[in-house]
Length: 471
Image 1 (cartoon, helix red, strand yellow):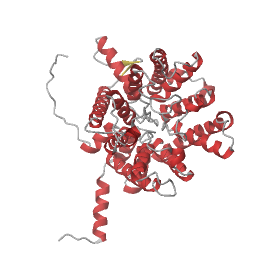
Image 2 (tube, rainbow, N blue to C red; image 1 turned 120 degrees about the horizontal axis):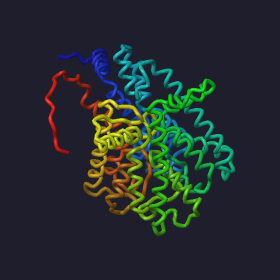
Image 3 (cartoon, rainbow, N blue to C red; image 1 turned 180 degrees about the vertical axis):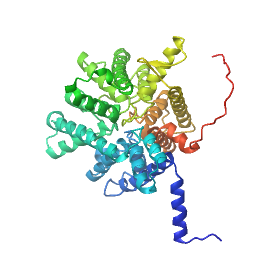
Image 4 (tube, helix red, strand yellow; image 1 turned 60 degrees about the horizontal axis):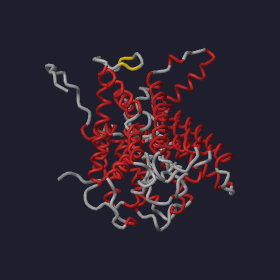
């Protein structure tokens, strides 16, 4: 009979742990963090009696995946320690669930071969073959500077209506943590609707969302360029990645704002119908920024207050999401740029994809197509599962939701956006479970999930004859 001694069980556990690939280890560690966070948040130390294990599970998953969807009132249902715990979970998820678990793997597995270090670098958005520690340390410093500056601005100029200085400081700090990490959690039930006309709150939150969404790689490159300005280093030395991220981000923000201004301007009794021109511009610009991945809102969002065209535009923005290495989700701006470049090259009759006088490798184009297609299919699957049987409960009283409402909510969960149009809290356990899975998969990445399930397979050396297809 096989030995069942503690030493034998420990040995088998150690061998199983060493056999885990980085993607599998990332998913396993993420699940452990969610389980531990759920038990902590459901305790009387963190929450009231209204927060059970299920509510805590949903909230912790939403925090670690920096989504922002919630079925509780953060300001009322969580104690101050619970709010601090939630902020800590947001930081853990926002600064990179994959980065942190990969960093921990070096201590747990105790292996340091070149192949493993390359695997680590790939899971950390290819930050390089070098050590993960220094890179992660720089990420923390940059994040601390951004969030600290934002907290100071909101405390002095933003949340001036909060008379208690301690509450004002915590509100400023919590919302800056949530904004930089693209989480979208707020301390108030109406999110930031009360600060719709406050340009400081809109500006600081929007700037933090963009700073966290473009990724540390871009931020670091811009900082290095700024430091070398004395050497008059020309802008043409900016990498293609940084150039694509900045241009795509700016283009999506402007087009999203103009699109929402157009669709909601003609919506009767819509969210911007009664606002002045400056109010309309401020709301649509902020909503364009936050829709791609952050989840804050300065206007009430529902199927009644938004036009169907506006909801569809927001779904597209959520699908694109933030940038690689950032704190947001979606298929990423660079993936969208590669797909647009491939479309343009096809229309021009080219056999290669050219972007800004650079020819992209074939595997990059294939990866972009794979990520976009797999993500779209996963969201469709989520929407189908959300439509199986009755999925409403609680306060909805059997209310049924339209296909557009379900698609919007599923895209918000998968894109780790967190915008809600009155659906999430009214779903039953099955519907909310679909969103939990969607948030987790959306944060770790669809390709990482597939890699964990199927593993890495050696590239075949067998060649095949070429064939033509009619497309």
